[in-house]
Length: 514
Image (cartoon, rainbow, N blue to C red):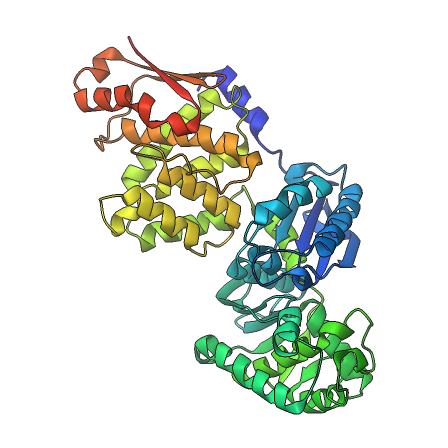
């Protein structure tokens, strides 16, 4: 790389955290939206601000993938207020994540586009298992586990409940089920009416859902259990106010709590000491889910954690893009799991990076783009484990629909689009699922990956002697050494045929040999 190219690439890189830098994590939950702002000081995070608003996004779901207009407006107004607080924090230091309620939308971009405008930052959608990983990370940092002990963490959200068994800072088992305080209240008490029969029937149904993982969890075991997020905290406070416990949740405390709750015949009439008004409409579903969890997992005691996913997001941001990036380990695990040829993947990655280095400035590609290109290069042959015919399509499906630790849905869709388009004619709908803010870089990186794959199609160990790339607008000019190219007629034919196959990228390729 020339000095000028090195400078161009350096300018795209996110600078490392410096003492005093601010970070923000936003959690768009199904019940509440949370934001935590922290200052990085002496290699530690110090919380300087917290904001929470009860939005009840999950309450606005219509069951058909739509969102009620009043709830949508409530969410956008909340995000605008959050956005004002973090207006001066660089985008690379802000991470906003949407969870179950947005996962349920049929057309999430219809909500995410105005939501990102209101917040002033990108919003990523994450899977339930990624949510579980971040929840555990937040709890583990806030309350460090004892050495050599496993811990069970339960987080009852508005739309889903996450269960994690972890050791140290690592989540060993993660599960996410579509039962939460809002979703369960709406599902089992749709008209607000409460009765013991309804409760018994609902408990049986939820416990049946928990059976799919409860035996595996009990087989692995844990030494202590912690409950995260607002529902568990609220239940702990109610137990303390009823003088059943001192703030933890005990198995023996749940029956009298449930009996007191069911003295009301309607949700609006629930009268529990220590229960806030904004929790009353959804507490029945929360207690129901927790009772089912205690029964299914044989729990006797659950302490209440001070942390939740938003704290996990902050700590996760410290490692992203560096040696501790969880995505690196996830990609390595995928390569082993699917038997990817690591040597060939490495050749393709090195070639792709050589191309990237030369066009990064002209195409305004970032450090995150470089990471995505490298990961796509390592995974581009993942579909071969299924079949050679259409392996790029198989690989894209696997990447898009797997739970890959550290990745948001958009990141996985980004990788999947690149893998899908790395060979053959690119379909016009390949990039449709991506938000507009990612389209330009996705298309440009896809062309770089295609060229890297073509140039290494013969699996040669010899380094390409001359590889020059120049980007100007939507045109990429590639220059190779004629003496090296002449004995490779297949490569020459592939390069000559690229122009027609990349129409969907909206880019043009010029090829020169001298």
